[in-house]
Amino acid sequence: MYYLLSLIAGSLLAFMVSSNGIIGEAAGNYASSVIIHLIGLVGVVVVLIITKAKFKNLRQFPLWMYSAGLIGIITVLFNNLTYTTLGVSLTVALGLLGQSVTSIVIDHFGLFGLPISRFDTKKILGFVIILIGIVIMALPA
View 1 (cartoon, rainbow, N blue to C red):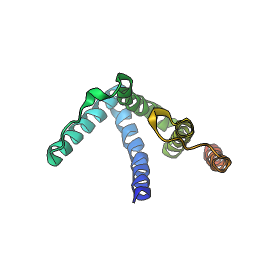
View 2 (cartoon, rainbow, N blue to C red):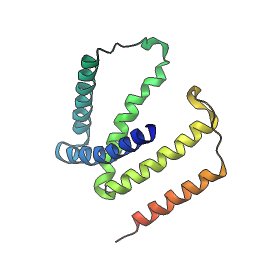
View 3 (cartoon, rainbow, N blue to C red):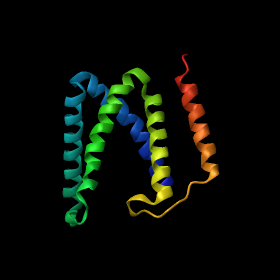
């Protein structure tokens, strides 16, 4: 089930980069970021109302953890800036490489209180395959 949810999230990511980029071209990168995040805010408020979910104690988190919202804005801006030059597939592939490298570091050191999952040599093969794919995608047609 979780594999399927991750696959769906990845599929939505490619769609999101495309649609955000189109909005960015039409409205400008900064204005599109405001539009995109406002729509996201409205969407999550609707979900909260429908599910009658309550906010939990948000004071328990250190202030730096709220930087994820800023990271989301930076991600949208960077994707909007690169997608017109690189295309959707290369933008997403490079983004996934960045996510993979960062997640390996987080797992290996157990950052943010997560369980430690040490880096092993079989993961190198995965990175090599990803890098070969990105190089092939970046070659001129």
